[in-house]
Image (tube, rainbow, N blue to C red; front, side, top):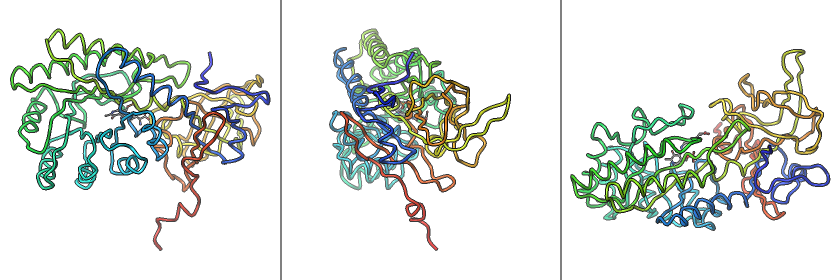
Length: 433
Ligand code: LLP
C-alpha cells in the first residue's frame, strides 16, 4: 500500500513529484530541509469536510485549527476556501488578520488568554471567543463593559471522555487544564454568568476530546453528554444553544499501522449522533461546528531532507543522518510519533536495508524514524518524510541555533515560497550585546 497522498507521483527521472513540481528541483531552488505543501490536497480536505456536512443537511461551520500550521499564505488559502480558523494566541490572531482572514470567521481558544490578547480580539471584532475559565469570563465582562461592545462567546466544557490517544494530546477528560468541568457544576455556573453578562452573548458550547483519534466512539459519547447538558440548561434555565462545537481531533495515517476513520465517516457519525440525541431530547437542532487541524494539513505536507553522514554499527543499527531533525519535527521525540518516508531522488530503487533516520541535533533522542526500510543511500540523496504537514513547522524551534526551514506551497506545477528559510542573521536578530 502506498502512503503517497494527494498529487504525489513519480516522474520519468524516478523523482518524487508533488503538485506537479519535481522535489529534486525544489531542493535545488530552496535548499533543505524544506517543507512542501500540496495545496490541492489541502483544498480537497477542506472541501471534503464542508461537502459532507452540507450533504447531511445540518447548518455548519468548518473552523481550521491553525495551530497545526499557520502562516500568511495558509490563512489566505483558508479565506479562499471559505473556512473559519481557530487561533490560540495573539500571534496566531495577528497572523490570521494580516493574512486576510475575515474577523467574523476567527474563533479564539486558550486556557490562559492574556488581557492584551483579549483586547486585540475584541478590537478586531472576531467572530467568537471560546471562554475557558472564570478568570477569562470576568476579564471579558470587564473589557466588553469598558469598551461598550458585545462579543459572541461559547463555553468550553470537558465532557469527561477519555479518547484513546497519547496522554499529552488528550483533552476531554475530567482531569484537564482546559474548560469548565461539568460534573462539579462549573459549566452551569459559567452559563448563568454569561447569560447575565451584558456584553456577552452565549452562542453555545464547545468540547474537544483530543487529537489523532481513530474511531468515532469518543465523539459519540461526547455528543451524548453535550446534548444532555444543553437539554438540562433548557429545562432548568430556559437557555437554548444555537451552536454545538465538537472540536477537532480526527486522526490521520502517518504509517501503515495507522487506520483512522475517513474524515467523512467521522463527520457522518457525529452528525447522526447530534441529530439522534436532539430528536431524542426534543432539542432544536443546533448548528454544528468542527475544528479539524491535523486532518486538513498533515498529509499535504512533506519534509525534504538531504542525507549527510552515516554510521553503521554491525549487528546493531545503521544510522543515516539528515540535515534537519527535532528542530523541524519534535513529534517523534515528544510523542513517540511514527512516520515513514522515501528516497525522493531514486524512488523506485529497491536495494533495501533497515536504517534509522536521525537528525543533526545534539540529543540522542533526535531520531526521526527508528526503523525504516530504505534503499542504500549516499550523502546528497534526498529523503522525503511524509505527512509532516501538521504540528511540524508550527512546533519548530531554533534548538542548537539551527535556522528553521523554508516552506513552499506547490500547486499545478507552480511553486511559491510561503515562509523563507531563517538565516544566521535572523538567529542573532533578537540578541542584545
Ligand atoms: N480544537 C481544539 C480546541 C484543540 O485544542 C485542537 C488541538 C484542535 C481543535 C485541532 O485538533 P486536530 O484536528 O489537529 O487533532 N501537537 C500535538 C497536537 C496538539 C493538539 C492540540 N489541540 C501533535 O503534534 O500531535
